[in-house]
Structure formats: structure tokens, C-alpha cells
Length: 75
Image (cartoon, rainbow, N blue to C red; front, side):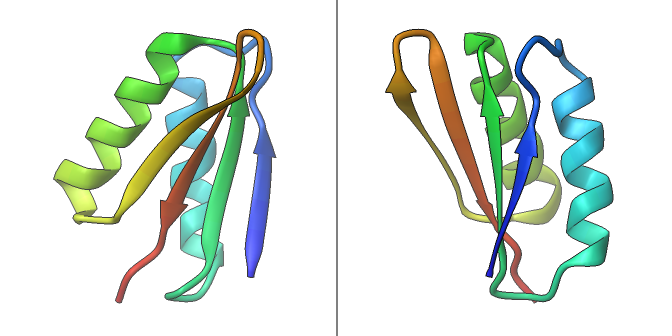
């Protein structure tokens, strides 16, 4: 199941904090998808969740200046 977070206009660490909270509420195998308009958030979020939890993450630009960061919750 996908769970979406709108972090448009929010600077780090807010997207990380919102994702941390959401990941405590979802099941392994679920994805948390963050929508952001800050390039630095993509790198920060991915680095945080890959290094701290070893969760697979990816980012893609979906529009001019808008990115989606996907985090897959693992066991």
C-alpha cells in the first residue's frame, strides 16, 4: 500500500520527521511517498533512511522542480 506525504514548501528536516512518523504507522512492504519541491530533501531523505534503516529509497522528478521520494518499509 502507498502512503503519501505532501512536503511542498517544507525544508529539511520536516520531510524526514514526517516520514519517520508515517513509517511507524505502516506495515512492512508498504511505501511512503514524499512529494517535495526542495532538491536537497531528496538527497537528505534517501541518505537518512538508507543508512539508518537500510530501507530501499528512490527519487524522481515528476514536474519542473517537484520530486517524489519513495521509501519502501522493510521488516
